[in-house]
Each structure stands twice: as structure tokens, then as C-alpha cells.
Length: 184
Image (spheres, rainbow, N blue to C red):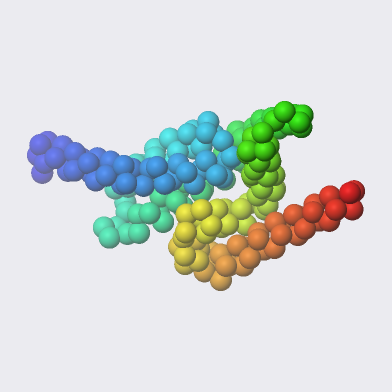
């Protein structure tokens, strides 16, 4: 095979990979955003994911489940980044001003934002496999089989991780709710 043949193959490979990134990149970014709870870490992880995927792409089999393959690379990259301590969350939960002049719609929006922040915080405290399985299931609508493939486990294990995550969250919020009612 001549130089032009190799170049043509490489160009086709790059073009195929670019189609994958264009098709799944935004979805993978949303997943990583939820995993990290922020844009900067998600962007860094996405870039590293794309780089790792590009290096491994020539070895993939035609007809592979590229979506699950990319999610698996993104998940492993995120795990590595978290283990290395590159993830430094900085949250600032501002206090609300409960003066009588604030319209109800503004108070509702603030309360809703605070509730979402509490949920994000509770999800972030889940064990890693439970958190990843829950995000894939609830935000990205993966089947348990797909979650198992991404997390290198069985569908039953994926189902158990989602169940345990939901159970922990329900328990956390029921304790919190009971504490609020007890203070009233």
C-alpha cells in the first residue's frame, strides 16, 4: 500500500471518529457535567475522553456499540480524575433574603434552586458506582444492560446500584424532612 493509500485510510478514520464525537460529544459532556457537578472538570474530562477514544478507535470492531464504548471511556477517565484529586468542587450556597418585599415567584425560584443544590450534593456523596449508575439511568435513560456495559458489570449489578442509590437518597431526604418537622 502506498503513501496515498495510508493517508486515505487515516483520513477516513479521522472522519469516522469525528462523526462519533459530533454525534455523542454533547451527550457525553452532559453526563460528565452531572458526574462532576461543574463545567470546568467536565470539559477537562471530555477532552481527555476524546483523546483516549481517538487513540483506541483504530482497534474497535466495526459495528461496536460506540455509544456505550464512549461512555465507558468517559466513566473510566472520570474515575481516574477523581482518584487523582483533580476534582475540587467549590460550591457557594448563598443565603436567601426572606424580606417581605420579595415576590413569591422569586422565593419559589430560590427555594427550587436550593432544593436542586441539596439533591446534587446528596448525589455527589453516593458511592461512585451508585452515582454513575443513577446518572446514566435517570438522566441519560440507559437500560440496565447498557449501564452494565459502561461500568463493566452485569445488568443485575447496574440495577442494584441504581436501587441502592435511590434508597440512600430517599433515606437522606426523609431524615432531613423529619428533622425540619421536628424543629417546627
